[in-house]
Amino acid sequence: MGEKHVRLRGIALQSGVLVRRPTSKVPAAHRGVARPLGTTASIGVSVELFGWMTRNPAHPVALVRSPRGFELQKPLSTSEPSQDQVEVADAARDACLALEHERQLS
Image (cartoon, rainbow, N blue to C red; front, side, top):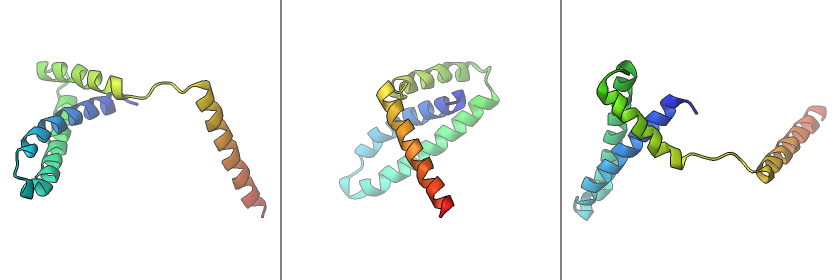
């Protein structure tokens, strides 16, 4: 995954967490509307902040925000597959290719 995707995910995660608190204080009757609106606003802010950071990579704010996004993403990212997982993936791929080959012959 590219560095830009990692930074955008980190920013989105941070802004999403910031939205959850205020929307939890909204009366229960209006929470169903408040949460999607807060999430939409959070996504918009994340994308705009990320765009600004990519246009101004040397700005001190961008330098401070980038590593935090990476550090938030790091524990959530996937690890290398085990040998068993690789074998299962290879077997699944081979089965799909065999089916595709059979369909082409018929």
